[in-house]
Length: 168
Image (cartoon, rainbow, N blue to C red; front, side):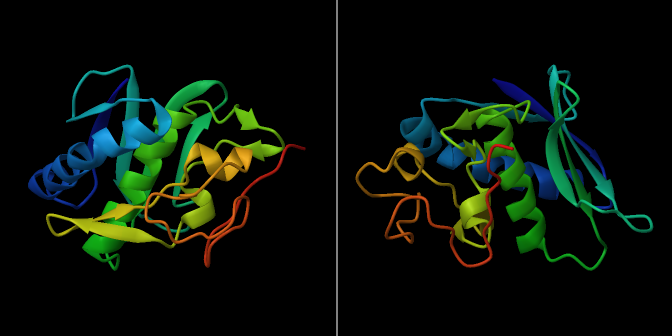
């Protein structure tokens, strides 16, 4: 799957390109865990887009993906956001778009949101913060690891700062 990151934010394209490069470095690990590969480009023409915008006024959601049966994402960046937070939000949405582009997939009762249960966790790649993700064993109660960073000790628990949606 290919995702175009469309940058209309105040963050420079070169900074966004650094984030894209770091995500590409960990993509083989994400693919190993989920069997899903992805490529990112900046301001490209891919069918799936992740829009980056600068916050203007109030917004109820700073980042989301998939809406009304359309595969896309949006990250709203505040001028006060650190580069760490920006790269975490972008990588979080990229991994979730890859796993569940329309936000319509569930494993059992849990929505297939691979970063939400560990949303406060991240690791550094070439100076760029990358969001942690849960593995399939988190959903199906298999053997550890339950997340990429091996922080969670049990399946189906939510890490500090994490959350999960259940089937209505």
